[in-house]
Image 1 (cartoon, helix red, strand yellow):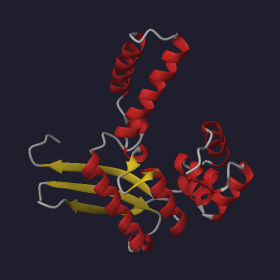
Image 2: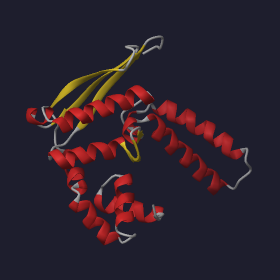
Image 3: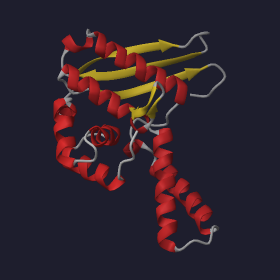
Length: 200
């Protein structure tokens, strides 16, 4: 895969609202040309998916996943706009894949905005002390802290996590793909993960 300039990825993301991994893929497919990348996102329906994100997802289902051995399980509340979509294979497969993701990675929140501010502040102070001990200049320290905080969110927030079945996309990218196919907004509303011997 050819390397893509991070500034171009950000520019394309700001321009289209598409997910980071989708923007990166679009730029790879269009050899770094922004306008061609926009066209690619439109053709694949990704930008359409982003536009649907403000619509109310009042229907949905509670999906249950029990891992092999019956020692780990997940209950997932996933929403969509109509009852019709809940019956589609694409929606059911999405619910299954997200439940498997939760079982495997045990995220602490759905999105970064849901993380307890006190936990974020604590993590940030740890990263700051670690960076200060390196003796680097302040502007470099700030970038190090920001990078580590982003990594924390990517590891612990479901929508930011790399999909366990495909390292080229995160969970939000996966959801956007299904939104583009089904033409409805889809939200992860809540989840709970149970494991024998672990506290909830």
